[in-house]
Image (cartoon, rainbow, N blue to C red; front, side, top):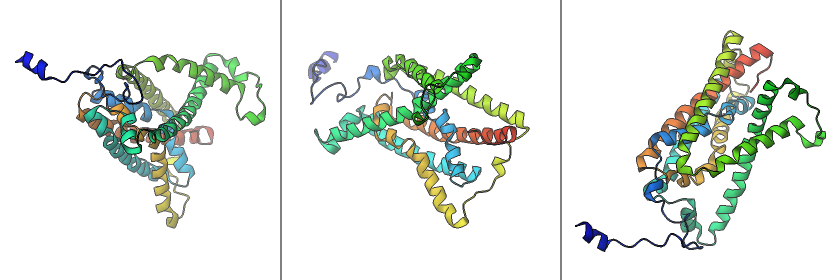
Length: 303
């Protein structure tokens, strides 16, 4: 029976062939690379949720006039919408194991898809620029903690540069540290991101606990009312939800690039629900609590 099946099976195409019509970005992902489980998707999306950008998102909403708890409501609504879109866009990849390159072709056409790809590349550069700058600031603080003299380093940049030498060095070091990670194949990233999430979660939670302990409570910010009028509150929350979604909207367009690594279609569903809504809503709350406590400690809220 096995020999009959082998005889009837359509022969695989030569994977060495690579041109505009067929290449490894177009071919369905081979079974050997479909290794992401539910836990892998929890870890993958945790990178976007257990991080400083998500920790600080409450700052932008509070500064827009919402109270802390109104901001939390807007964040939860935004995360639910993100989850739905991520799962819907990822279904094609999880079911058929094809990526954004294929999806963009049957929407835009063979040549029109270059427009979508160029837009995606440009937006990815902007996204990484923001993340790398935040990472550079973290490196700067780490170096200043280890070497106190680093904090007193002379600035060699003019005021028009909008950054100083310490920040620039931190940014360069962060980018250098990221280079080796680029060589890790996506199907092997699940253990790397898991360890990163553990370190990030421990760090951020410890920061919050320390701030609450030092302040003797949550601080005044959590009880501060909204500064927008009741007439503006509805649109303020709508704007806040849009802000939450806008931070990851670009990444949602090519969600199938990640979901195609799913071992089975259901893995991406459960993993994204848990991580995006769970961690995505909890970390901004922790950030708001820590910031409110910092206001009691230092006299101003530090985000």
